[in-house]
Image (cartoon, rainbow, N blue to C red; front, top):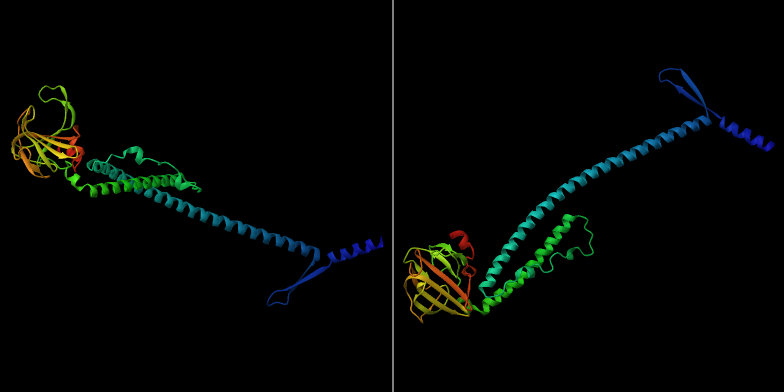
Length: 319
């Protein structure tokens, strides 16, 4: 009991220990004294420490928020730039796709000219649409995924085109003689494309009738050219065709030139591509001077436009 009283009184004396603060104003002899207990001094020190800690915490939070706002602004700017760049890449990629598609059309025409079967859309689209570039990758942006899929499509199409052009090149190298026998130039210059291959109204009866060739209108006497190397098998009049020339080019190719005004070759003569074989006229079943031109492959009429180097541009530019 006495020990407890002794400790209590000792602790109380420590807390009640007083400190005197002496202050003197500069230039005067006036002295001010202030007394403060140790307990109060500890309390004031604790309050000051809490204030400092609070201020530091607020400063840290403010700086963190400021840095977050700055970083957020930077991210927004970066996202806007990425949006713009993605849009630019997509536009350029679409342009590349258009070029690849146009090359595919030209390639198909070339394949026909060198007597290779067309690849067709199924072959060109084989495998397109897979997510091969995205395997084991997390992208998180549909636009990027679309771009990667488009790139995969282009790579596949270009790979197919590369193989196709290699096949065409090999065919050209190994079949140069045959290529000279493929009808591939216009039979007449300075003309106007007037009638296509296929069904049309008959110019005399108006009834629907199949047209086995194409017509080019030009003044009487305009030169007519052999469209490939070959041998003349006919140079005489024929029903409906008037004065007509027929050339066998070999490899199953035959060309017919009708409604001529005159001949420049005779039956059995060998001709080269570009040789003048006759002249435009208005003979036979004809309403005006023109040349009726046919291409036959293995005794089957085909569209001559498929074999011209200029292709279907003739119909668009000269009709």
